[in-house]
Length: 248
Ligand code: NDP
Ligand code: 8X3
Image 1 (spheres, rainbow, N blue to C red):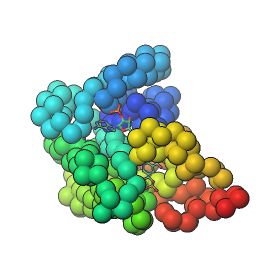
Image 2 (image 1 turned 120 degrees about the vertical axis):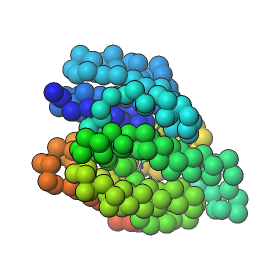
Image 3 (image 1 turned 90 degrees about the horizontal axis):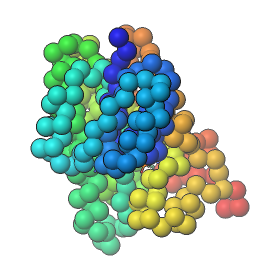
């Protein structure tokens, strides 16, 4: 039987690219996100290749998360990908609603989904959890404050989970990308497409496909191999604040 993979945040960027790639590799998919139309469109396309189910929910809605995932069936691979940055202001100018969103989505949402899925993995003594962290979970940068805190939390959760679950034969892996050109910056800058575009100008950023390929590699290692913590940069980036751009 094909392995089942649940992907949060499958409506765009990294999650969508992962769904598209994994569909070609014989996994059955459970695709999650809030934008139902996008999910259905993707499911329709990928159902030519594999079995696809969609679940529409906001990871912040604790009760809904537990209810909707209660009957999801055995999940072999959980890809905790849903998340975003909201704003890039110094803390003293920051918008508290943005902070709430990042902590609620990137940290608490990831926890709710993981709590809903993990008991089944423990009972079956098998499974793989892949957490999409960030270089922002390894370093801080100006304006990153709460986003960095949320991704540092993902880093800590990833490490604790691995220690808690390795005795059950469950793998826990983190993939921590640098700059990936997706809808991420448009969300961060609240729909300001020009400002978002500038983030990725003057160098070759990572693509969602690059991260999808990394996910596919991580989950296709033999059962005794766990790639526990990966940092992946575009070649032009050496740290959060160090990007070599042409013309400055
Ligand atoms: P996108 O904005 O393209 O995708 C974000 C995804 O998260 C969407 O599918 C969105 O779906 C989902 N999402 C956001 N909020 C919620 C919510 N409240 N409930 C459910 N789903 C939600 O960005 P990326 O693909 O770049 O981001 C994916 C992950 O990668 C994030 O965790 C991000 O922090 C991380 N990352 C991104 C980097 C980058 O440079 N792009 C670098 C390092 C890490 P919908 O809106 O339909 O709910
Ligand atoms: C996304 C990459 O540098 O914008 O996590 O924080 S960055």
